[in-house]
Image (cartoon, rainbow, N blue to C red):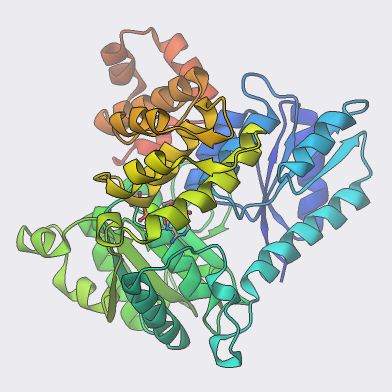
Length: 460
Ligand SMILES: Nc1ncnc2c1ncn2[C@@H]1O[C@H](COP(=O)(O)OP(=O)(O)OP(=O)(O)O)[C@@H](O)[C@H]1O
Ligand SMILES: [Mg+2]
């Protein structure tokens, strides 16, 4: 189960990274490393690991801040923290907030391996739920609803889960498309296999192909080793292609071939290899319009959309609002270390009647802001109304917001300039040294964004 599992190790001490890398690789793990929280987040977005092992002390944002961000963006990704001797109270606190485990330095590598194994097993057992046939409902865990619209949808989920059919999940932003994709996997006969998700819109085109299909050593500059792609990583399980509407047309052809032939050819490889993967995809875009404009291939669409599920908007299922709000209050109160009893009646009224353009995600954000700001256990209506006036915004610290902005800004600039640091630095009005430093801070390499002359053999 854990053979070849991908582990991300985060430490600013390069010696420790090298040492841990060697030990874990010797055990058959695939190891990637990052020297800062920012670099780790970028890597997680590009190539999600099964477990993160991070030092608590990092330059800039520390390991706990990294954990917090992972917990909100990828709650099922286990994080193991390494702490210096004597800082155990912090670590205990972290464990109670949901860190998977911690080890004090200098640690025993056997202990670390055991922790990693446990974390991998937990990830697997989270998906090793009773199958629908056995009557178990555990695959629905964490999915909150009361509306008949959602009950109907869950019935459909249960039915499609049993088949191997490709499912296209549609719905506006924040309606719970990823939640449903995970539920299909958990309720399916593949639940013991991996669930691998990739956001097709978040990865530069040139990188996306090798992310999906893998590459052989030397396939392009920077391809120092042969690496398997997500299709191979999802073998025996489910691959979730999120934001499929954002997939570049050139790659759509290649994806179509994979789905037709059930084989993938890594970039630079001569031979294709068989893959056993169920494909789920999701989009908030109107694919019919995209097809009409020639931006999305019809033949691929029919392959992906064997079964269609549509998530209702939150304003189409208002009965779910109080339940979801209560569920999120419990989740968030822990994070802020507050004892909250719930919403005042007028506050609930405000929640129940709001417009919710950002759907469930916005509801979560409104609950989070209200919990953060309330000074009484019963959240007053004024706070809810205030949070509702802020258009779809997450409660971030200034530092976090700035970091995020900076990272996205740099990614956009590099996309725009095709990975040219000289051009990007000029637009940013920074000298190249400064610009390189910024890229380094976020774990970005210009080569990720280059599309010219990059592929030497066989690929593109
Ligand atoms: N029925 C539900 N019960 C509990 N939590 C939910 C439910 N639906 C959505 N959520 C939560 O709401 C947030 C948004 O859900 P999700 O990421 O699945 O939406 P999405 O449709 O993929 O959004 P986007 O288009 O923005 O990617 C997540 O934090 C998710 O856990
Ligand atoms: Mg999503």
